[in-house]
Image (cartoon, rainbow, N blue to C red; front, side, top):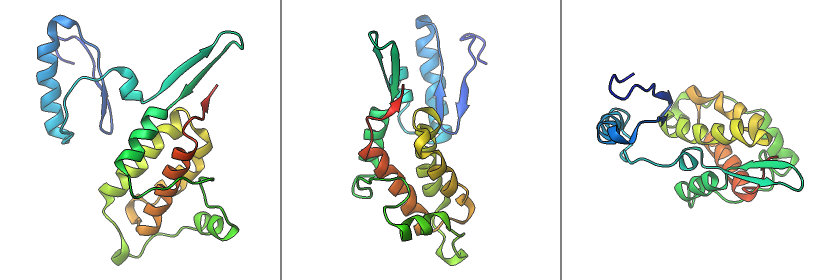
Length: 175
């Protein structure tokens, strides 16, 4: 808690959401710049909450429904992993053999393990929609996330597969 700002900053992995009075924006930006250096995010700019969540909310008054989607977030994910992902029909393989391979993932041999940071970054980007608007990928995100300490290229490819499914179904959400 910063005395002059009188706010509490909540941090989850590398995301921060804070509120501040306009009169202390300059001080807030200084704090955010220091925080950005500490976690190496590079861009300390202020973004609206919609950017933070990466979601859209639509209301259908006639049907009396509200739908929350994360199309912006998924499109940003697709741009970040451009060339690595392709649209997929399912989050876990299209054939019986692919589904079996997904269900029976094993830890990679030590010599075949990939960079934990790279893998954790991808998994984190999948966990966000899985927990916010896309429960349809929850199991398909949870299973490979369990291999963070022993992930190989196969685990990473499954993460990209789930990302491809998200891209293909980006307009889905919770109503």
